[in-house]
Length: 217
Image 1 (cartoon, helix red, strand yellow):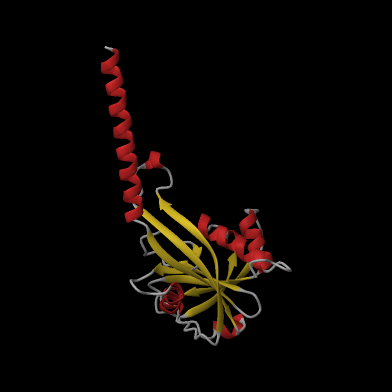
Image 2 (cartoon, rainbow, N blue to C red):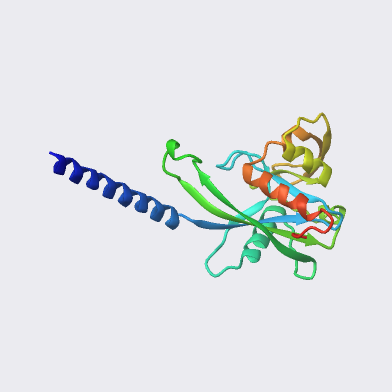
């Protein structure tokens, strides 16, 4: 009887290890690299865009990201997405780039909610432009199928956003019409505060680059 129970116990352990390895193999196969770029103007403003409501993922403010194609460099993938979504084509002499950090994006977030359906390794790259946000704004040609609004945020506003403290303030916002026209409006800061955990993570990293003698900067 003891031998039978012991053998059963070993079998359970082996099955557990097998399925655990199978799960990690599944995750490894589904690991899809993504390049995300943060466009910073010469006067230290960041461009945030809000996804169109017609897209599969719910609409919220974030940065420009896309899958890295085979044999494509991270920076090239990010620049491609930036141009597709905003119409901004950045040449190497206009920008300097730096890898800010990595973020593991998994959905659903908990195993108790089911096996992950999407799993990405997001690489955040900051692009520092030699032009002010006023100059870059005149070159915006957003795709209404991808973007519903865009806003240039500054450090003090970002601090409010990442701190999750309610604010009564409004900020300048550019809405995108169905025909691609840019319309200047005011946007409650509370709308920008609805961001993903990954976006909040990289905004905190960005704030650190602005600190004096920052190791990242």
